[in-house]
Image (cartoon, rainbow, N blue to C red; front, top):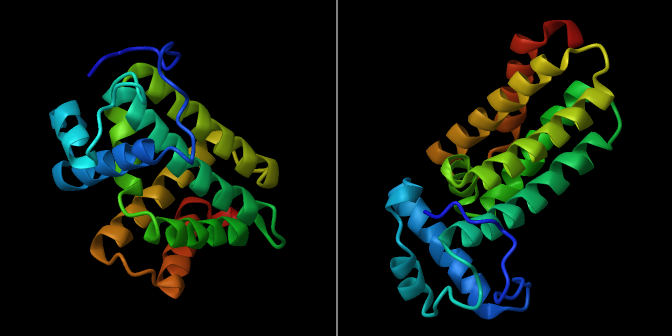
Length: 194
């Protein structure tokens, strides 16, 4: 994969109305679901599955992955932010965010695969992902003022893994189970907060 910059001339910015861009992102996600190894995915296979070339739409496969990541992160980030803006103790809002995010993931097959691929993608995308995660930790820290940020970072990671495991075991959302798992993780990692 190229380590190219996301700023490209000669390639239009993908927009929601670009059917070819959507097909390319969906083809990439389908490849990620079946391979679980971003490095093994070829631009040619994605283009063939989408029925269109990346040329004119994305600089390369990395920029297509970045677009898929941004799309997933926007949806999941909105779910997290909405839950954290709610009422009640931060621990309940955090548990609610896990449920909301899980509901979004249920409607976005491959979302966790996109997140994982971004972790092993180009450095500039890993930096973007770390910055976004830092934003979520900061949002949580604004509501959990007595908890060290490093604990919150670990807590978000543990909740992400739990949601990922639950979705892999059963893609059908079980809200009571997700809420119980989230509460159990929060209690185990931050018992003083409950």
